[in-house]
Amino acid sequence: MGRELAARAAAQRNGNGNDGQQVEQVRTLAQQLERMTPEFQAAMPKGREATQLVRDAMTCLRTIKNLDKCDPESFLGSLMTCAQLDLRPGVASLGHAWPLPYWDNAQRRHRAQLIVGYKGYIELGYRSGKLAGIASRIVYEGEEFEIEYHEDGDRLIHKPSYRGLRGDPVCFYSVARVVGGGYSLTEPMSVEEMQQHRDRHAPRDRNGKIVGPWIDHFLPMGKKTMILRNFALLPKSAEMLSAMRADNGIRVDLTPTANAGEVTERPPRIVAALVADDDDGLVGTSDLGDWADRIDDIASADDGQRAEAELNEVTASSSMAPGRAEAIRRAIKAKTAMVTGGEPA
Image 1 (cartoon, helix red, strand yellow):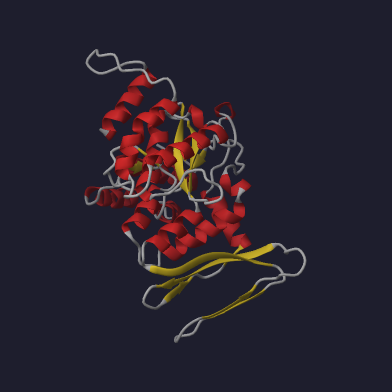
Image 2 (cartoon, one colour):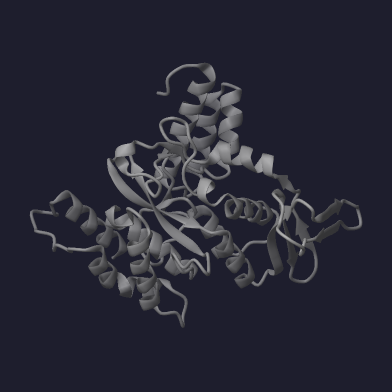
């Protein structure tokens, strides 16, 4: 039924139906949300109420610029993933996740992209039952901070300042304790290193200016980056993995039982429509997950054929969404062209 709902929404947008049958018109996203309530309920854990998710979604439509312009299936898809992961969208006090609009220049329409917040990842980490504690922290000027690495255990000292105003941020780090013993401590990233990471992955406009959450919410995005680096070292639940794979993506299947990570695509180029209208023509590269670093390495080595062969092997042996595979292919070609001075194919 999830695929049928997505097809009906697409048919409504295009103004036609299947086999000459007129598709029932749904006048507003709000009405579509109401119609999807049973599907959301089927996706949610027992004891949760889909009506709360629908209320949160309605708030998102009122408060997030251009979200009401998005094609229905992408918006509903982001909510379906929230339902499966039991994350509340758009609730600032919780910081779980947000459906954010962007302008898809290729398809000439707004689409909704799900962004999981660092607090959402922390919530999933605690729920997994595998972590006894996890935190992502910022060190500010004037605070005592020291890390020593030893074979028999690392030593971390961080004493926050409580006198006067805080100084400028200096670095980020994340620490976690594993149930049953053990811990994970990331190497700290300086603000300058985090800015380099932002410059490498954040979307940009036509003039090369960074736009989006990295501009308006640099510190929370830095915390999220450290959480994800720590997650790479920690035992993970299925929900944690699904969130990591669905983050920054567009869900293409509304079936409540579908694996969110497997039915999520990441566009190779996006527009931060939250920041500017589609007329501004903003473009940028999306987060391609673990492939981002590999793409850069491959482009620097000018070996796009090897990358294509690796990608074909991965997609043939896994359930990677076709759209994500195509996004990686295009990013490889674009990056290689940038390095060699040519034009992307």
